[in-house]
Each structure stands twice: as C-alpha cells, then as structure tokens.
Image (cartoon, rainbow, N blue to C red; front, side):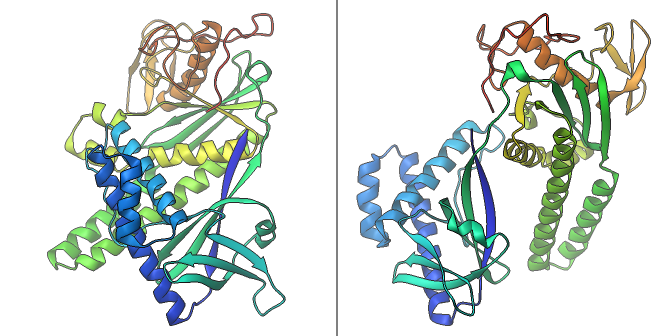
Length: 402
C-alpha cells in the first residue's frame, strides 16, 4: 500500500523581490481556485473553464491544473459533507500546490545546503530552505505545498512510500478506539479470542478547561471589540488542539506497535454532527470537538507503521454488554450497568471493546467492507457483534484497506 508522509521545510528569508513574486503568485492562485469552484458549481465544462482561467490569471499551465485539482477536491468534499452547508470560498493566502513541473530541489556546496526552484508568474524563484530530514529531498517527492503563516513561507513536501499492511486473515491483535469528550480517546487492545490485553484512557479534563479559558478570553476581547486579538486566540486554540491530537494519535500507534499483525478499529463518524442534538452547553462542546482530525492522524500514522485500519457503525457500542449482549444502562456519566447480568463497567471502555467486536461480527457474518455499507444492503447493520473468533472459525469476509 502506498502511504504519504508530509515534511515541512522553511524558506529562509527571501529578499523583497522574491517575496513579492511569491506573494503575488499565491494571491492570483487563490483567485484561480475560487474561479474554478464557482464555475464548477455552474456545471461548466472543464475545458472551457481552463481556457478562461488561462486568459484571466496568466498563471503557468501546471499551476492552473493544480488549482483545478484543488477546486474539484473542495467541491466534492462540500457535496459529500452533510455537516458543512457553506459553499467553499478561499480568503487570504491559500495553499499553493506544486508538482514536479513547477518545483525542484537542489543540493549545493553553499552557505545553505538545499535550495528550491519555484515557478511563479514572473518566472522561477530560487530560495534556500531548512528543516529536518533534508536528505529525503534526494528521494522522489509526490508534490509540494507553499503556505504562508506567521510572516514566513513554508514548503510542505509530500513523499510517498510503499508499506506492507497486514491482510485480514493475518490479524492477530485489535486496538479498539472510542472517541469522546470527557475521555478524548479510550483504547482497548484485544486478541483474536476477545481477551483484553491492555487499556488506556486519554482524559479530556485538561482540554475542556483550556478551551473554557479560551472562550472566556474571547468574551472579554469581544467586549473591547479587539477583533484581531480574537482571531489570534482562535488560531492559538486550533494549534493547541492539533498538538493534542498529534500527541494522542502518536501514543495510540505506539501501543499498537507493541502487538504484531495489528489492526486499529474506529467508529465511522461521518454525518454525526447533524444527528446529535442535546443541550446548548453540550452541543457547543461537541461541535468544537475535532474528532475527524484525530481519526485522520491515527489513520495515516497507522498506515505509515504498517498497521491496518478499519471503521465500523458507531451506534449503540456503549449500550451492549460484552458478556451477555444485554442492554446497558448508564448508572452515572462514566459507568454503565447491564440490565441482565448486572455487571458494571466504564462506558467508554465498553465502547472501545464493542467497536472491535462489531468488526468481528462484520467478518464472521460476511458483511463485506467495514469502511462502507455491507454488501447485503445499503444500510449498516447496527447490532452485528460477535464475542470472539478463533482460528477454527477462519475469515469469511475480505475487507478493503481504509
């Protein structure tokens, strides 16, 4: 399986002339992407849009084509995302995507080791770059992205590597991940027989308190009408959340790496925001929860470490007893009690166990791919679970790698 990894390099203090060329190209590129988006929204032919964009924006042909690709991706994402009704439109500095036609890297015996040659509307610009793992620039890169933040230019260079992901018939260990608010993530490791090997909770108390402080700070700044400061606090909060998600995902994958032939099992949470409607306070906390980003981090880090990833239907995973399959009722916010066998367990822990058991059920019932709807129908099977599966039962379903 081909796995992508992104490494960031900083462009070192370009002179004013080079900075102007990069700035102007990024602004014109953003307008080109927006032009493509709105023309695609009007169902115009791609060929006609291309000739119009080439005439209007005077960008290099390869940059127009990557702008088209970004616009198509954003439009498709908007059409398929039920949680985002707002039509995509970029403001400020947007990401500028390069391929091998518009950027290349050279090593020179100079004050700076590595230099990037970047295509702009005024020809090529040669700039020095710095960052970790510079030796990887010798390898074939897939693409690069130019971004502007904190008054500096950065290049996100994307490399592609071939990784061997375990096949379903070779799975020996399963890392069930349940995402929540009070516990950002709950991880339970099971083997093929359904035995629990390890449990780990990632508490969300510190995160909740941190976000409450950010919210209170924005309220105070709003009273003083300091709009720029409000924007800065939002960026700081977003960066803090991203850092937390990176750290949690790294720890989850470190747990999975301890077990051979491992598979990470998560819930399929697409469209969940439109289905959850509780109190105003809970909705605010829930809709600010970046669960999708955390799942993406877990997925790409798992694949990079040759670990498989599967997703299952999320409903009722905390409401089915792991022992007798009876109905679980909450005795408190964190605890649930089985109405049949009266066992009491942590609800998040139970959810992490049952997402794995639901994958067992998908496999043993030959329900097809756990990433999408089972082959037998267009609706996910909500209650399919299985206590365990041994070597004698074997595997009857071939699941697509997510």
